[in-house]
Image (tube, one colour):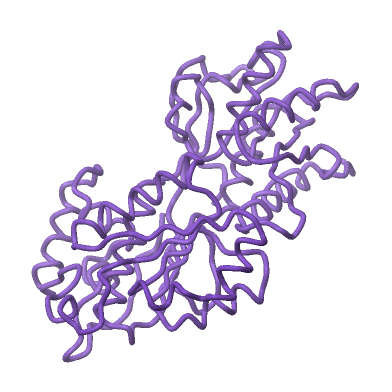
Length: 364
């Protein structure tokens, strides 16, 4: 549960923000975002409190006075390491819906390769063409992070955190730790991890954080085993997951369970295990993270996150910053939940039947 924020009421002359609405309603910022999005399910009493707070504060996403300010391009820049991955497509889509409905266009910048990042930040041409920036993740380079900070534009970081910047992200360490703790609870002791490479050239800190959560959970077993021995690094994506899981299962000491850093790797692992005629979950259990659109179709146990809503919330925070650039940065942690399906089982009597969906918290 995300604790409600508690800033004071907006100062005279300042427009109310989503943070102010959350404080008055006594809910989290992400709950306000879900109410504004209308499609997400929110308890009726909670929704009513939020709507009353919106009315009391006269909250609107972007006041007309700000919209008509001179010099605006009516465009928000999004910088991202990928435009094709499931996560990136969904968070960008969520941001687009909110911003487009307020009359803004998006300008996408794909900075997947280090050389593309260098060229982009050397020119800094984005400053003249957009009113604000959403960074999907953060480059694993402090000079580039500093360059982002000095853009002189309203900036929201999505899927990562940096002190002093407005951000929207899950707790990646906690999410990964919950997944691995669940496998341990099921009786597994040899748990491998499929992960993107962590070689210092990446764009997002999620890989490092999820690997930390994996290590922390395994450390509780206190069996003296080096957790990095069972980490298999690969390129991103489904095909990489197939190759990584295939390599893992050729080891003489193959695991009884696999934790994939994200669901696309997990989906690849399931395909590899099928091709190798390895029974899931009879011989190997698999768990992912994200709740990909296909996760339910293949009965994948995963740690779910509201990806589309994260993007929408980032869009609303951008609008708040455009309305009032003097706002203090906010750091929003979006909740996750464990969804148990048929790709995991237990060596104990309380195993979940295949196909069931249960919401269980193993990390408080």
